[in-house]
Length: 174
Image 1: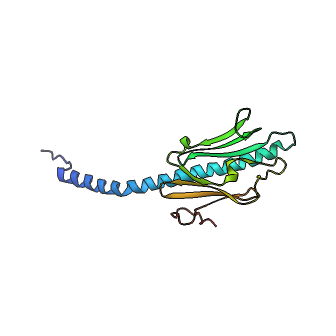
Image 2: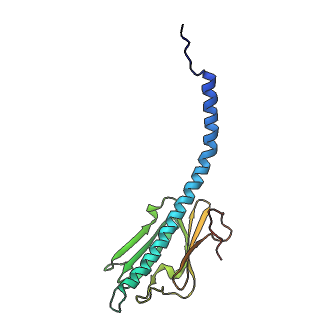
Image 3: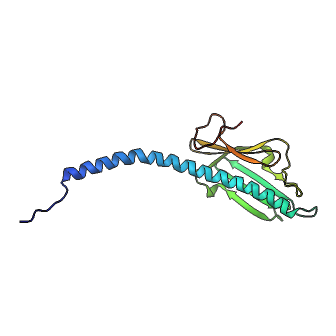
């Protein structure tokens, strides 16, 4: 007679219980990782758009060239857009060069932004923004927050707002 080897019902149940315990521990960690990744992605895209707007202003570089505008709009935390336009600030007759909207970034909220970033015009010759003090855009995903800070010289950095949850290698904002 041949002996058949198989799993017993008890072995199968023990395996399923262990798997259930591992999944119950892993899923919350995965959700946190997903929130952090989405937040980083949205903020890095905003930073890249800012750099694109600056370089486009310098590229046009002429007194009669179209102006380049960086416009941030927020109806509420969950509905927002960042746009880069020419001629007039993202209205009729303007060319939309780039746009980032909240629908592209599930779960990302735009908590706050500086007034100067609601509509900034770049100087065409040197690509400098049209403000004199540091500006910011503050994004959130779940308990995590990141801030895009922009200096009067147009340099941008990423940091965590004071008191926000630590993650990655982002320093706390000054």
